[in-house]
Length: 349
Image (cartoon, rainbow, N blue to C red; front, side, top):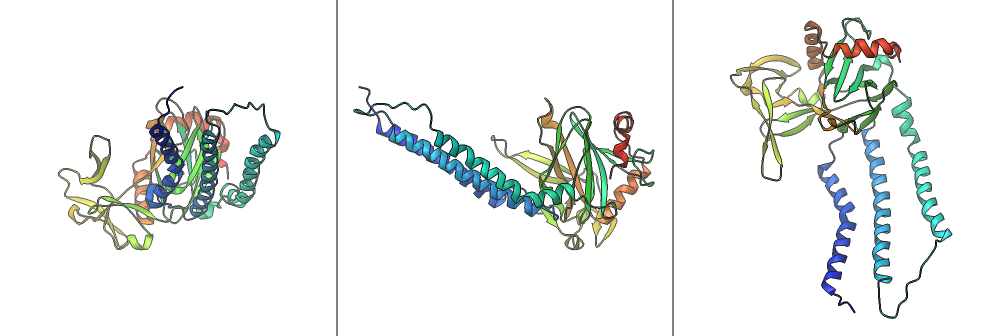
């Protein structure tokens, strides 16, 4: 008879306990900042609450399921004098593990119905929001804003690639489609995610209430309300964002450094934008990430865009510069595909 090693059994049980504790460790990590801060004033907290509820439901079910596996391993292990019993199914058990998940899903569907309606059905009126068109492709995000005439599909439109500008404290409505395959428009800080499907127009909206900036002294990201930022000196340009490897594990340390030979920079202070000595800057305007949450091809990992959250002053400055420079990056994609085949998208409410 094969000799058993008690220390191997103990090591196996200890390993199983470790796996069971992973969900609790993950939640603890989220609680201490692993989940990026919520900047969506309109419904971000509701999304986080729903996420927390689903997390604990899954955690309890995971611990119960894995705990049952460990229990059965102990109870029904190979032992002298015990003969294996083979089961061909149990209708009660099968009904139980089918009906419980179904009941949970039905309850979640009913519980979050009002949230879904608020986010998906009740789009803000045009008078209270800024509209931007989003055209996804392998592997970039194309954005378009109406120019001075206020209409889309006209020669004064503003077009950008991988850079979206939104105003703090003002609702942004995004009309989204795709050029080639299914993509997913995902802004973690805004708690929004919406598929971009070729030949289909989808809509999503959000309202960011904090302005991300980079603290040049602490070299870390911070967030200011519109009132708080008035007291800060925030550079809008003149710095480069860099990353240094800290160790062989790939951990990086991020920081902003002044551009070489740069003496002055446009700095926002007390609601005004003026060229000031670059040494006066305390913070730098810092973008947040747009990701594609759909595996869209071999270059999926490169499909990263950025949201710049502007004050009214910095947004007007950027828009006026874009109009003056006739910014139309990726124009052919809009005119040859979006405007040609889907002109109805330009008048969609």
